[in-house]
Image 1 (cartoon, rainbow, N blue to C red):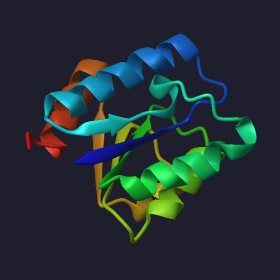
Image 2 (tube, rainbow, N blue to C red):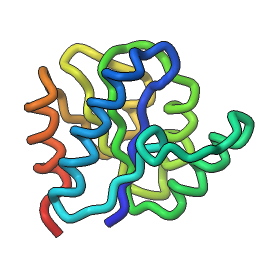
Image 3 (tube, one colour):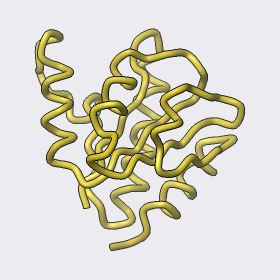
Image 4 (tube, rainbow, N blue to C red):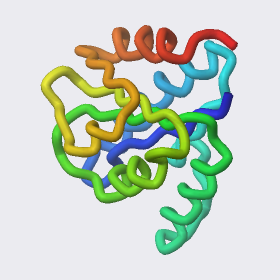
Length: 129
């Protein structure tokens, strides 16, 4: 199964974001699935083409994993959720207490407190293939 990972990047501490994306990617991969995180693939996509590239990757994916650590709005993540709605399962992983309107489109919402718990819960939702 191919899993597209949606997340807020703008305004984030980039090293912390990369560390968290690696944890999520490793958990998906450990379950035998293929994760796609734009930041980890380090595609040299011009900013103007990033959302078009993301939509193409979503089309190739079987599910959307949405990583949310706070309630700050992300235009890109909101577009990715909206684009995926009705096309494939949307699984939100939100830090306890975070909430966004886009959660209403999710097939599942899983809350977590720390990245170790997040990793375990990702493996639970995406069991070994």
